[in-house]
Length: 109
Image (cartoon, rainbow, N blue to C red; front, side, top):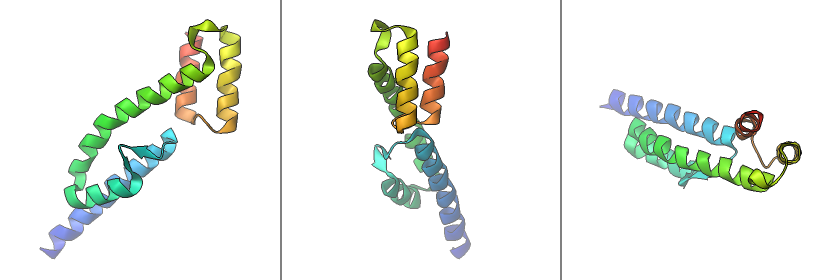
C-alpha cells in the first residue's frame, strides 16, 4: 500500500510540474484553478487531473489570443501598427512568448 501511495504522489507531482510549466509559458495565474488548486486536485485525483486541465487550457489559450488581438486593434488598423503594438505588449510583459509567436504568425499570413 505504501508503494502505491508513493507512485500516486510521484505521478501527481509530475503532472503538477507540467501544469506549472505550461501556466508559466502562457503567463497565466490560473486555468480555472490556481496552481495550488491544481496541486490539491492532482494529489486527490492523480494523473486524471490532467484531463480537465487540458480541456480548460484550450479555452484560456483562445482567450489570450483574442485579448492580444483586441489590444492590437484587430483588423481596424494597418498590419504595421498591429505589429508595433504586439511588440510593445511583448516588451512590457503582457504577452508571453507563445502568444507573441502565434499572433506574429497570424500577422504574417
